[in-house]
Length: 163
Image (cartoon, rainbow, N blue to C red; front, side):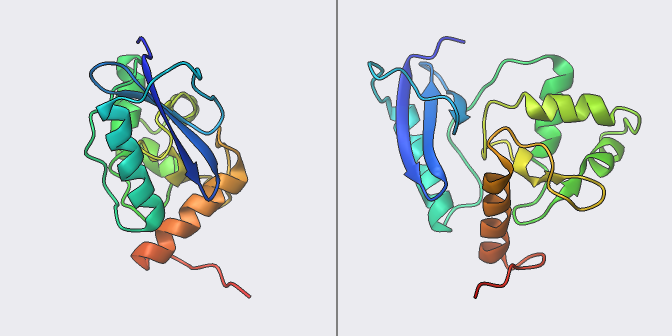
């Protein structure tokens, strides 16, 4: 996919690059800055506006067009990730059972790691079977922040005590 447009959003957990082609957002990343010569498009701007609302705690579901290249298996994993409710987590093992592929835990984890739409496809909601935070391309401290943010907004799950 050709990345033609870029919006940058300053968030509580770092700068977020939102890359788009002429039809959809194709990448949302903390780690890869966009080309400084790229212009913002209406699609990337819309995505930035919705992501800002997510960080403000007023939006839980994204409506802007999105697309990422991947194998049919990867696409099925990314679709399954979108069924994990806001403010909750699911283990890789439970996700593999939900996908009716209980022996594909490693393949599911690998597809999860190939997700180019951070936050949008909520790969941060997948944790280890022990309940530990594992495997997040945006670094574990961001995953922890995102999960705590969603739990605080939704009042689901165990909240972190702040002193």
